[in-house]
Image (tube, rainbow, N blue to C red; front, side, top):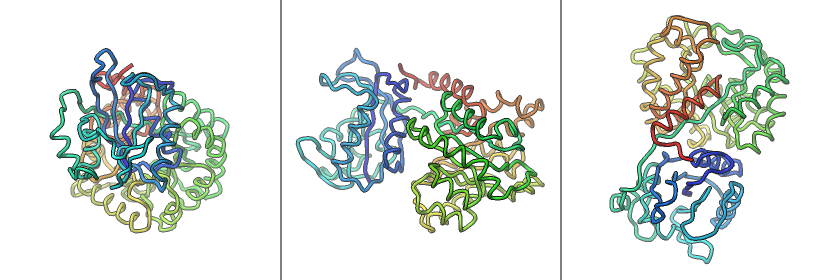
Amino acid sequence: MIYVALGANLPSSEGAPRETLRRAVSALAARGLTISARSRLFLTEPVPRSDQPWYANQVIAVESALEPHQILSLLLEVELQFGRERSERNAARTLDLDLIGYGSEIIDTPDLVVPHPRMHERAFVLAPLADIAPGWRHPINGETVSLMLARSDRAHVRALRTVPLLMGIVNVTPDSFSDGGRYDSAETAIDHARQLMEEGADILDIGGESTRPGAAPVDIETEWQRVGPVIEALAEEARRRYRLISVDTRHAEIMARALAAGATMINDVTALDDPASRKAVANHDAPVVLMHMQGDPQSMQVNPVYADVVKDVCAELSFKCERAIKDGIAASRLWLDPGIGFGKTMEHNLALLDATPQLRALGFPVLIGASRKIFIRGVDRHGPASERVAGSVSAALSAAQRGADAVRVHDVAQTRQALAVWSAVEGQAMS
């Protein structure tokens, strides 16, 4: 496994340091690196320069066939893109990317030393690395990350809760439960997607078939006529802006066409139940969201019953992950979605939202999609879907507090603002 450390304490063109790190990870992924794990964010006091802003630090685990010096070149390229200027030693910076580990290799050249020569004594590197690889052994001293961290001075480093990614919903449908018909032409859907990017969406989730309770299925060609032109129009722009294009589909043929057209993520409400779907995505490196659903859209809300909803959903998602891995889909590509509103009562939905930590304990990133769902009306007893914005934002905040890696939302601007305030209260926001 390859490990890259990220740090920043000055704003970049992408915003505050925390936002810079998020975009930098996306930029690395856009250049072909597979991000298999990312640590929490850590806030680090600038030592020895106490006059500088505090640093945001993170470590990611990467899979790549590139050689170490090729990785270094890529890191330097991304640093430059984000405005890094190399001047005096220990100067503040918009972005710092360091190759700290390349498997068990030891590299000592004029321009690259791996492992990083001072990582064993730097808590701001060891703390995030311990988040994702506590048992990794230093190739020179043989010590684990956990042991090195225990010996380090952690007084100036503290962990932060990571703000989840924002997945903006683009329904190119006439019958979705919340916004059906509003963006059912390619032109309006493309405009809406661009607006969501402006508002801060990290991922665009484009869907051409409604999966609301009781929704009728659509044929493959109709679904593709809806989503295909939108994907093709946005693929290059999204790549330049380091956004992912997700396709919300349960059909193998749509998955294959979408990936060929430039989609970079698959979101399947059936969790790849169709063997053809698993085959369609196995030879790509796009992340895949596996969602839990009891039944199908026509039957899922007819008396859903569980022995223990949290245990049952975790068990079924674990099985579906194992099945996907067995069929050649890398574990590092898998995301989990408990399927809020898909074959669940209000009580089930609330229990699953609260159980986000248990879902994350399965070892995969977790996406929570509670936006404008009918369970919000069950809690509040008022309003159609379009009037559930405040409840949706509240659900997103609850998911963030419980460690969700991404939230799927209609109202990107409002959710982003709420998360920014929450982030500031948590001590994450820096400028």
